[in-house]
Length: 463
Image 1 (spheres, rainbow, N blue to C red):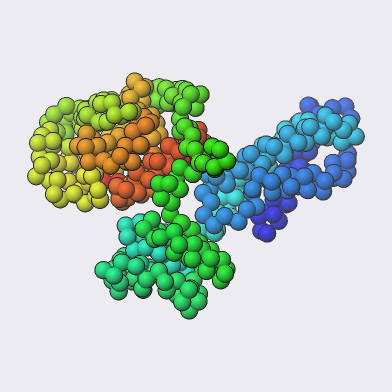
Image 2 (cartoon, rainbow, N blue to C red):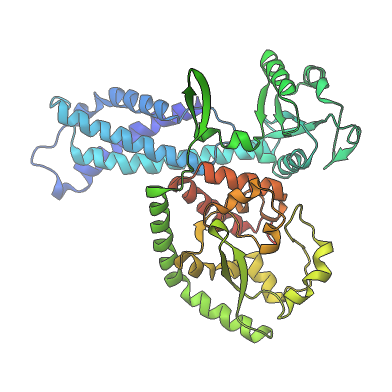
């Protein structure tokens, strides 16, 4: 309701300011006969209602709990632009709708600024209130495995997400009564109803793909019965649901999986974007390339660049460029350190890797060592956004479904980097990569790039 009230006020303020700028500010550009403001004032209610209706259709007033700010701002841009075009259309179709075209043009940029800042204010206010525990929801997590524990960790670390974790339910007898990230496993999945009723649970997240379909349906039914929200962490089959088409043979319904999004024209658009932005990025960052090349060379023995063999599109090998952040003989030391890896699955991650130089720690903290990969993008070996390029030794251990992440060019950044970086288990990283492949769009790439800038700035999960 607060959004609507603010929008009504700001739409009208924008219309009034647009009129004043057109006819009162730049007087030397004003026409011989300046229309009296009453002519505009009479249509303010009509215009406001049209704009609110358009905003509603576009989804600006949908009550989504964790909509990203960038999505909200994008919807504002779309809503204001469509609403402005509607005003132009009305001006063209109905001459009695007497409205200056320059006023409408001014309304576009004024309202865009006003409404964007209002959304930023509301978003910041909501996060502040949630961080204070106001309007937070009691959350029950079904499944105390890696994903369930990761969810509990994330919502505990970031109070602004608006959750208070109550605990886990899990059918694994080995987990019963144990604590993970400070929360207990309270029993089996069959205790959902009892736990929800007795503890005022407001949201349930099914964070395990090992729960049987029948139990999932039971949980959903009970949640609906008691007015409890529920969410499900998708498995691989759910991730490809966006590409399922209904077909039939002899009256028998069949589900057909269509081609991935990154084909044909989409692939051409993505490659064109990669070439353009990587070229501009190399030009803009050239002073930093020279500076850090000099620093790497003068602070430790060895070459400036570290060129490592990685697996790219369709399993093809390529040399990935990085500023050298480790000592010269780092690869020879790997077998001694491999047992000390702190990452799940086939990745090697070590928070206090002794091979990293002091300058290397700084570069990794701010992802500066990754800058040379812009040359890989320009050469067509990588993309700006895509799955992380794996090492050959990692690919040797892949299951068949893991190899789907090799269907597209690897990226400098991707969904896993903006969703936890070094904190994410391998299996969840692969699921994020597959989600990206299945749901690719230029807008998704832009969002990931913007979120990457924020993650790098904060240094979240980097080591």
